[in-house]
Length: 332
Image 1 (spheres, rainbow, N blue to C red):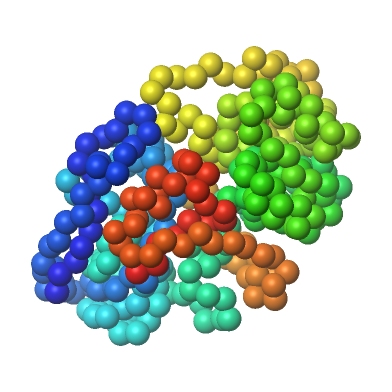
Image 2 (image 1 turned 90 degrees about the horizontal axis):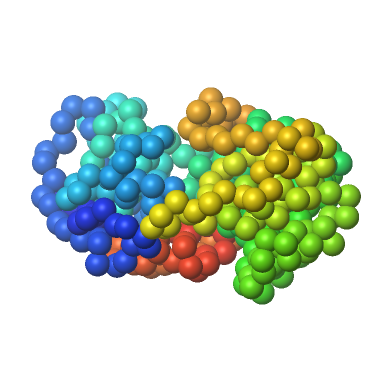
């Protein structure tokens, strides 16, 4: 059986372009004992993958030039040499960026049987959802009545963070760009604020208008002017959970930090970065809390879906151009 997969041809400097991705084909070897073969149905592309294209080890190993790329995926077992999995089982795994994956069984997670669509385990009930829950609850220690600000609030992580904060009874402000993203946030009961064509001071003024009582929790996905604007609106004892800094992922040179970082001292605020993998032991608690709300339609989510393996690079690049609302997925 053959598998089609993507490789990276060179490590990019700045924003990657389509030519860096090569679609290749290989004949898979016979299954070894303990291996499973999966036909992928859904692939995930995520901003963190840009860091794996740097050639440097960060909190995860970089992609290797000329070797199959990896990412979250959902698929169906089509052949198994492991007693834990049978043909027809639906599983999640990290053998993405390809149509057929052949992996050790230890790297597979069976999907729960419920009324939630399988691709939700790449988004609202997968790594992005767990990231939102972790940052809000374990890092920022969000509590009822807090004033909460979320950047990239219409994305896969941010859109769940704002809703989880609303469920807690918080006043929530969401930063986004395009008009349809701001409208969706407003429909969720979130105060929408646009960052487009604004300086840090102008964005800070808009945040103050949306949250006159300041900010107790800031969920950071972006950095740049969003962070500088948020720092100016912090309340005493505010907590900032830093999930990502997408504003700098494609920078060709280091950007200066916020000019008002001293607000952390003045407001006695806490700023903490985190990697969700370090908190994965809490994933069952996240599922127990969030799955029933998703199944009942109490937490809504959106997906941006591109069709076909050939669209995977374009789907990834669209993440840095505001080309998605909610989770970006590739359907095979």
